[in-house]
Length: 155
Image (cartoon, rainbow, N blue to C red; front, side, top):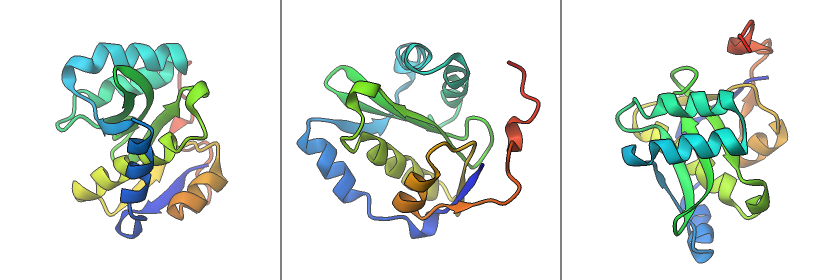
């Protein structure tokens, strides 16, 4: 199922950013020289397909991947405009760092960046945790969106 997010009604990002900063974690846009490190980490931590999507975002200006870091440790990532224009994702947080607000911080930072670039809406494609996105950013289900753009994808 795909979800639709109104970017003009996003919650304030500041509390999520402050929560991360108190833990020593910074959510920021990725830099070009970090491409190999990030893409390899996504491949090893999640999947080849997600790594392929993440790699695409390094061809955009600005780069459309955000990362969460603690010093030089990569904890999570979030992409947009990877599979399609206006799509949020893929996104993920290392299993040992979940439940600390990293995913929410990356989600809000990424959606705020999309809004700043002129997008009014974002689509979250092929969502697993529907309730999480509904609660966090008031995402709406898009009827008839399964399997969506991933229909017939080569594996």
